[in-house]
Image 1: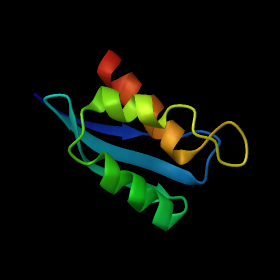
Image 2: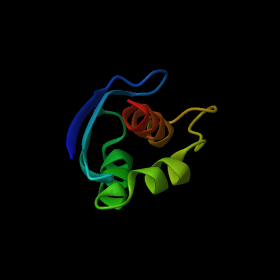
Image 3: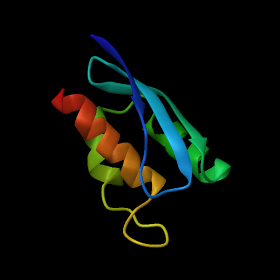
Length: 83
């Protein structure tokens, strides 16, 4: 099963996160805005991983406070899996 996800993050520099869930695996993560090197790195590391594992690893990572683009990706994945 393939699901395309578009998520609007809150409280971070990035303005949008998109990705595909293909049979529970994260593919094609893209951040709009944010720190380019960091968001590209997170996207590359998440590619091909089980969605639950990505969310678990990224949840709670801080960036100038208790929130971050990686944390927002974890929330987006959690939301997509719950739908």
